[in-house]
Picture 1 (spheres, rainbow, N blue to C red):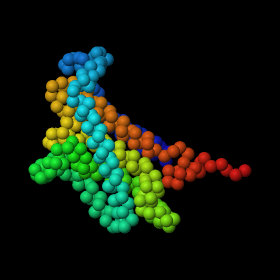
Picture 2: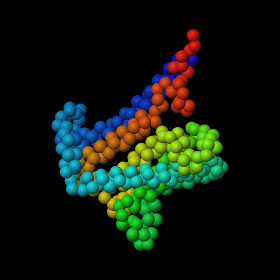
Picture 3: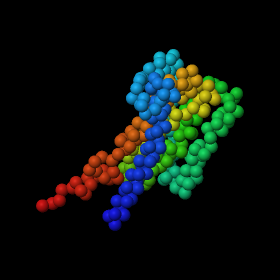
Picture 4: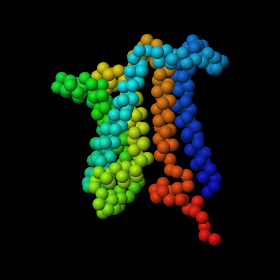
Amino acid sequence: MTSMGGQRRLGRRLILLIGAIYFAFPFVAMARFAFQNVQVFDLGRSTLFENWSLTSVTSAFGEDYFWDALRLSIQLALGTALLTLFVLVPTAVWVHLRIPRARAVVEFLTVLPYVIPAIALVAGIVVIKPHARWFLNSDLSLIPFYAVLALPFTYRSIDAGLRAIDLRTLTEASRSLGAGWNVTLRRVLIPSLKSALISSTFLTVAVVLGEYTIADVLLKRTLPAFMAEYRQSDPRGGYALAVLSLLATTLLFAGIGVATRPRGGRNPRTDEPSPSTEETPS
């Protein structure tokens, strides 16, 4: 049995190693092209540590529209995260408590934005654009569309958080003490869903910072749209921004793991000391 367990651990480590190599090589190649002042045909093992520089990305920072695009993307990310939490948390709680049989239908509906390409959503927006110019002319009009794109990830994060707690018992206990639905949601359920809400927010930000199709078709100068445009005039600078964006997204996902990690020595479900840390009576 010991050898079997060792083989399984070795197999998992090999799979992780292969996956890391699979993703690392393209990333290193893109970073070398973006940050090394070496001709492309001279890139190789002999020039691996030569002429690394940040001039490609600093020149991009000096562009007039870069900071405006970054500011708009941050505003869209924050607005989308707030709208997502405001709509999905009460909806998910209501579905779990009132119509649990409809959970499968709701899950199917929330996964549709992952199946249907973003260009199809844009086609629908273009059809209604003549009748809603007052709304679509604003840069912040992208917020509801980004909230729809993030649904497959955000709803499942919140749904997993609700499944991890005793939702019905907490709600009935709060209601029996005289609390209304707003107080129950704000002071009982939201603190219990902190990890799920943090994950949902980070995932929403990652989706917004990487979305290009809708912003480009609707002529909104977001950070991904600026990167695509800038890459045409300065390929190295464009790919340098892409590397930084990929690193930022990776840090977001790492932040999810850190922020949602259970506290050491405590049971994540009951927030009580784990049996291994309890003192045994003498």
